[in-house]
Image 1: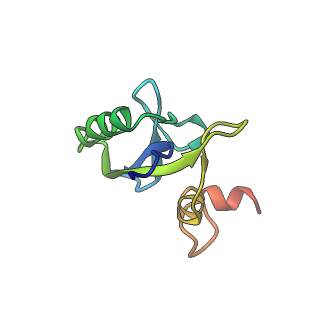
Image 2: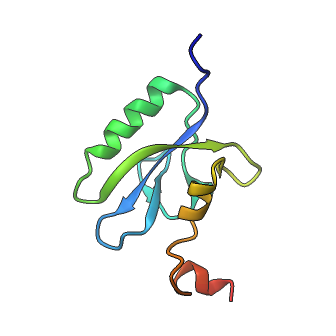
Image 3: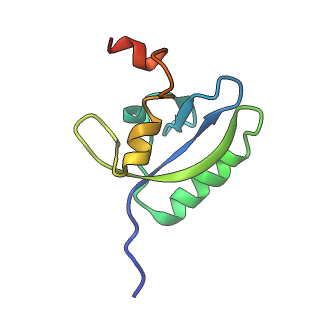
Length: 100
């Protein structure tokens, strides 16, 4: 029996800055997971991934990441994605410095 499809978001890294970014429903990229398009259909998710991969001048390493719906928009279901969205952990800068 095939596994049920779990919701996804398209994620990648910004080519120039290296930041983690997410594809929105209006085909833009955002650094906020809560603004990402939550994909609940497997065929549509694969199509959106293909569309993202056609932007090599903007992104690198696009893939589908598991997510779940929340009151604030998509939320990670795996610690790796939760960790990725906070940025590098070698020292406080960027998104991490805001919480200091």
